[in-house]
Amino acid sequence: MSDTEGPAAEPTCSAKGCQAPAVWALLWNNPKLHTPERRKTWLACEEHRSTLSDFLGARGFLKDVVPAADAPD
Image 1 (cartoon, rainbow, N blue to C red):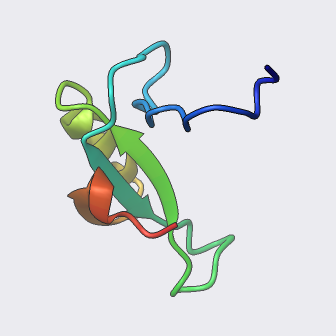
Image 2: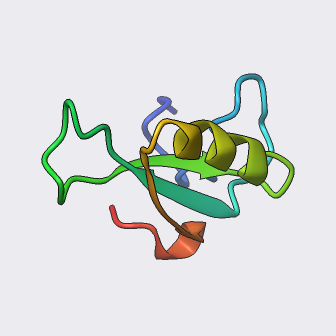
C-alpha cells in the first residue's frame, strides 16, 4: 500500500516538534503579503494554543481561533 492510500492522517499541532492532535485552528494573515480576506491556518493542541496565538497576535496577524473541526479547508 502506498502512503496516499488508507485513512487520512489526523491533523497535528503546528508547533515545532509537537505531534499532539490538533484541537484549535488559528486563522491568520500577514497584511503585507495577503489580501484582507485570505486566511492561513496553523493548528494547535491545547498545550500550544496560547503560545502560537501570542506569537501571531504580537505581529498583528491573528484574526480568529476556532475549533479545528470548524476550520475552513
